[in-house]
Image (cartoon, rainbow, N blue to C red; front, top):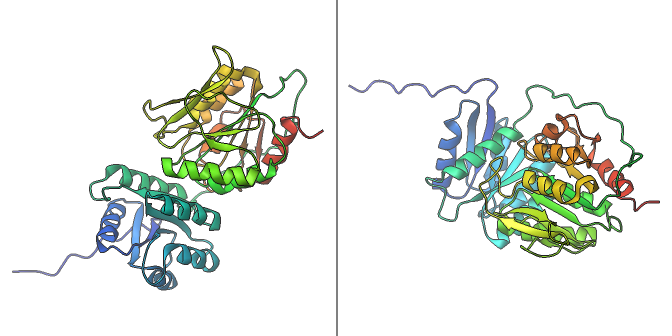
Length: 357
């Protein structure tokens, strides 16, 4: 004899509340099951388009929205702008297939206020373990803070100290929240920094090429994905291509870009640590580095290598970071010259690179 159905499990009081928005019922169901399997996450609702998502947001308290781009009735980009305006406390993760068009839309979404993005596997998300791990990590990184994390008090550091070498290269690392922060930083550096810029942003291949184009326009400097063996030139920016670690080598003459597909570091490829380690070896005391917003701890060990070589680094502060993982880990080394708001990093770098007299 069939008895009554058991009651649905009750999510813990402090579980992060997730709204899933995708026009595919299959995708919604798969993501919902992945999220509901976690004790610290719960799905409060699902929706098949942006209009229905806004309706659900008016009915339920929501912490995070997983938002598809291409949907009928109201697409993801339109919905995002409404969510940012009407529910500023809610963070949005864009999810899209990895096409150039969707990459362009995703980068625009980040500028409009999306907190992060996850690329759907080309063969679908069913059975895609990497997608599940990636999405869950981002949901947790962007979850509302249950406890305030103290940011070390720090006054703006001096641009230079007696005996420090003249900077030869600027190395930058970023992840979650990085693209909008990088655009602001490159705008602040426009007309300055004659030294080469080496940049690793955690991104897939299609995204890194588009990011380089955007940074080139924002900073009014040549900026492109690094190519293996090309000579590092002053005034140019080299972006680590998605799927490849980028390093720099100048053992046999001028510095050159090197690309490799060694195993991921800190679960990332490209990763910041290999870039910073190589820069410390190639340029020694001439390295200036900065770590911007991002989840995880990538870049912290590389910053230690920079400091041991006599170089300098600063990190973005918690208040201006989307996620204070990478900069927090680098700050925790105790070797940073400063923990600065994003708006102060550009002016500090201009002074440090000795282009503002």
